[in-house]
Length: 199
Ligand SMILES: N[C@@H](CCC(=O)N[C@@H](CS)C(=O)NCC(=O)O)C(=O)O
Image (tube, rainbow, N blue to C red; front, top):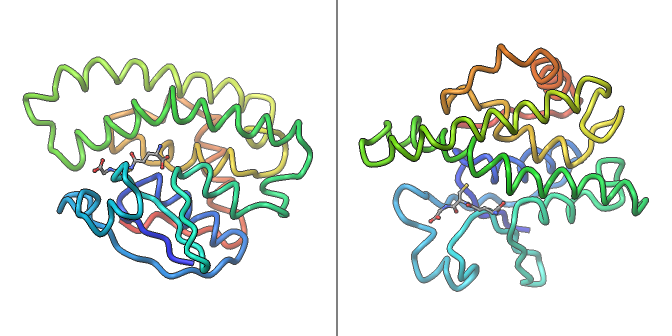
């Protein structure tokens, strides 16, 4: 299997982390977002949307969308249980992550950390930060009565949400307001075979 990604991307880190947690081997192909690699014809022929991560299987099939990739990789493990209700709960959190969390927290991080807060994105940054805090509030509440987002064991929903939450401070978010999230971050980091984000 080949995983095409950029180590600075939380969406790509989700795939690296799930592979480490369940002991899957793959080849890493570096795609540099800042150099425009995702828009080059070679890459676009694999994903016409021009987005990483993508996973290329040994038979040539290609899967995009980070959360689809990690659920596929985790099939048959406790991180993505076979029970349809458990899967639906995991997906509920993953859709939340993609629609109400990542567009604010990851984008704020990109603007602040990688673009150095250019004037033309300042207004956008100021508009999305409160939405990011709403997402963090929701996660904080959910973690007030469970160790992980879908109960007392780690699932792919945690991997999805961990990726950008644990680096939210790099987008200017103050995580010290969120004791449950901070404990959850520690718990995930203490999971056997955990790997940090390589940035
Ligand atoms: N919904 C997609 C988002 C993918 C995405 O936005 N990837 C970014 C990096 S985090 C990317 O490829 N950006 C490069 C570009 O847009 O050219 C997922 O979860 O995989």
